[in-house]
Structure formats: C-alpha cells, structure tokens
Length: 495
Image 1 (cartoon, rainbow, N blue to C red):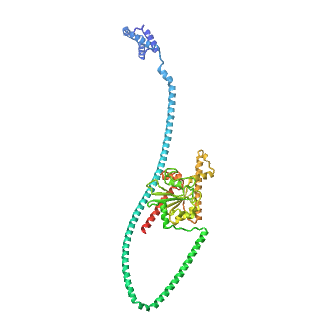
Image 2: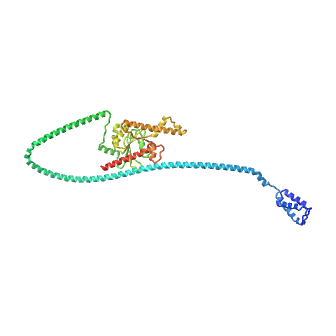
Image 3: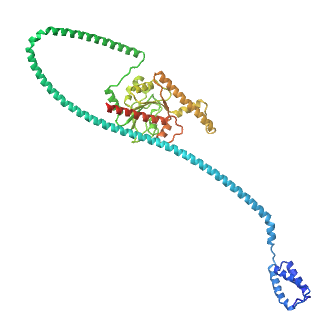
C-alpha cells in the first residue's frame, strides 16, 4: 500500500524539522527524498504506520543526547588551521636552524680534534726522537765501557806474558853470569900467560905510547866539546831568564811522581770517564755539573752552589745513573787560589782527566787560554762553554727596552724581541771568544752556549723548547772522549 496523500505533508514537515536541527542522520534524509518522489501516490497505510513509532523513538533519543550541543569539529579544525600551519612553519624553521647550528658545532669539534691529534703526534714524535737519542748515547757509552774492559783484559794478558819473558831473561842472565865466571877464570889463566909474554910486550911499548898520545888528544877534543855544550846550556838558561822577564811562561811537564799523585788526588779509576769542569770563580761550574748529572740545585746529591765561590778543593761527583761510567769534578776557580794563570793547569793536575770543560760566564780570561793551551799540549778534548744563556738573553732584552709587564698584553712583540736578543747574544759571545783565541795565538774553535734548565731537560729525556747548543755539546763530549780513549787503547796495545 502507498502512503495516503493527506499524511504526506505532515511527514515531510516532521522530517524537515529534524534535518534543520541536525537531529537526524543522513540516512533519514534519504527517506524524505523518497517521499517527494512518491508525492500524490496512494499506497497502503499499513506500510508507513510501523515506521512512524521507530522514527519517534529515534528522534527522542537524539534530542535527549544533544540537549548540550558541542562545536562542530570540522568548523573548529578549519578555524584553527592557519594558527597550526604557522606553528608548524615556525617549528620547521627552528628545527632547521638547530640542525645548522649542530652541524656547525660538529664541524668545529671535528677540526679541533684534528688539530689536537696533530699536536699530539708532533709531541710524541719529538719525545720519541729524544728517547732514541738518549738510548743511542747510553748504548755507545756501555759499548765503550765494554771495549775498555776488553782492553784491560788484553793488557793484563800482555803483562803476564811480559813477566814470563822477564823470568826467562833472568834465567838467561844467570847462565850468562856463569859463563862470565868461566870467562874470568879463563882470563886469569890468560893473565898468567900474559906475564910470560911480558917480555914480548916491551917490544910493543912504543906502539902503546903512541896509542896513549892519541887517546890523550881524543880526550882533549872531548873536553873542548863539553866546554861548548856548557856554553850552549848557559846561553839557553839566559834565554829562559830573558823570556821570563818578558812575561812568557815556561812549559812545565809533570813528572811520573806528580802524575801518580794527581791520580790519587782525584781517585782515578780505570774503566771510568773522568770529566773536569774548570774556570774562574763564579762561572756556574756546580750548576752545570748538576744539570749534566740530571739533578737540580739543592736536590739530594747535587753539587753545592752559591753566589760566591764555594769550591776550594776537588769535589768528586759520580753520575747518579750506575749505567753511565762517568765521574764529574768541580775544580776550584782560579780566582780563589794563589796560583798564577800559567801554573793553574799543572797545579790542579788537570792532565789526568779524559775531558775538560772550560766554563766562563761574562768574559774569556787568560786562565781559560792557559787551560786550552795545555789541553792541546796533552791532547785532552776541551770544550769552551758559556752558561746562563737564558739569564743573559733576558738582560739583553731589558737593554733593548723590554718590559716584563707587557708579556701578557703583547705576546707577539715579546717573542720577536726574544729572538733578536737571542741572536745578538750568540753573535757577541762567539765574536768575543774568537778575539781572545786570536790574541792568545790559538786556533778558532766552537763555543757552546747553553742554559742549565734546557740541559737538565735533555738529560732527563724531555724534548727541549728553546735549545741552542745543549744537544750538540752532549754529543760532542761523548764522541770525542770515546775517540780519545780508543786511540789511547790502540797505542797501548801496539806498544
């Protein structure tokens, strides 16, 4: 059956009100659309009546649930979309800036790590080279000690062989004495025979007198020669006295007794290297010895130091490292003893040392010249060393107008001035030494300019920052001393 026409307007109004108030879902709207299509058509009323109660109940349920209406979520989302898009754009921009900043920080950190690795590698390389150099020097010294030990063993074997030869010669001498006695007996018998021949000898007396005259003439000639030798000796004596008056010092060679006494004084021992540090008073000998032994001043076992000369007798300092067969000696300064410059070398027994360091501070003196001359005469390696280099360079910087308060404010200017002062100090020192050597008729030679702090760092195996001649001094002392000991051992063996 079709819906009667008189129900259609009422049904349309009811459904239309529900649609306008958003109380019915869209599925019910389709029902209204069907009614419009069937407007004016007649159908059974029973087909519509069962639907109306269910629509009423649904409408009542919807109305009761929507008595407190809420905003339309679609409209609210559309209204908030510009703000959300602006917030998203701002968040994206901030995220991009954060990523750029993080990338910049990452690149700087990577560069800093690279620079740190390079500096660390450079430091490790310098340290490795210093350790290799120290190990090489120690190995050379140990090898030298072994060579000296072998030479001593060979010398003892040679001495034993010489004793055996002496005993053999003594036996031969005893045999010769026996033969001499036999010959004396024969001579006695011959004398008896000679007496018998005395008469015959008278015939040759004239010949014997002639021989005597000839011998007398020879004796007169020898006397004349001796007289001439005496005149020459007197002339030499007068020449020596004349040179003495003119200030020319004589050359004095120590005797065997003096040599043995000097060895006892320094406690000389075979198998050790004996190094002497000599020079005028106050030149810093004790501080230099401490640095060469790897010790600081006033450290346990260090040589005594002071503003005034503290050494008036020999001070003997074995090297603290038992692997190094070295003994250092602090020699009294020439200014502290009543000894002339030309007698200083022999009076101190410096001729028994393996190596001599001539140390000076402010000026090169005649005492230093006398030591160098005698070192050349005795073939002893000698090294001219000027200490306290860092202190002298600071003094030159002050003379050039340097102010210590400006170091922190202008480090570049300080470094430039330090380089200029350092170069000036080195050139003036070498020029001064060369002039003194020329005035003393000595050949030009190298002067080693050192700082005790730098020398101490090198001895301890650390890489120096501002070294001048410290490394070269250590190397030359070892090489030249070993070379001299090698020549001495060869000469002793060959003899």
